[in-house]
Length: 193
Image (cartoon, rainbow, N blue to C red; front, side, top):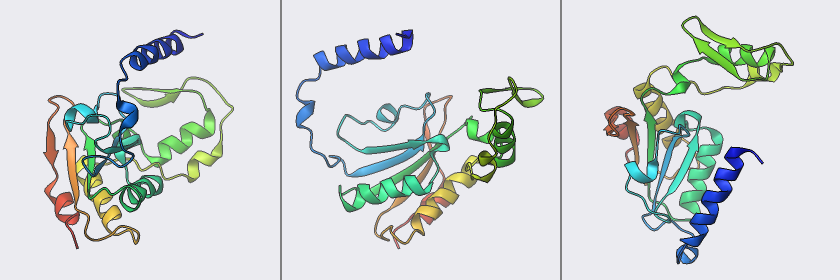
């Protein structure tokens, strides 16, 4: 058993011992909102948004991007579980700003092993096998945070399955201070229709 697996299972046993009445939480989120944010390990939506278990839906992916799957989750969150407000929260110092679709496709075509970055850019650790399929995926990389938050809010707002009455807010989480910074253009784009 790896150390990480052992640590996770040990932590879970402790969690189970202190689980209390959480098994009786309702399926719909108690505070009726959802957050789309990045998978970055430095972000803790429960802490920066004041959440407890059962309060809100938190949808996470690389960059906190409004991918088809993220929008699918938001629509389910609203349609079947009653969320009434949505937040799109990206963050400073995001890894999705460090590469482009072309860089990712090229790295994957050479090797499926973990790559590294230095002052000269991205490098593969070794040769093959690679896979050319990576060249055909839109990795939803980020040029600027303000631009990407606004783009994602607009993409969600304009989606035909998203009702016009749901306000969508756009924010950037500052990883150096923990502060949420509004992106006014995103929040404006996310206003109810």
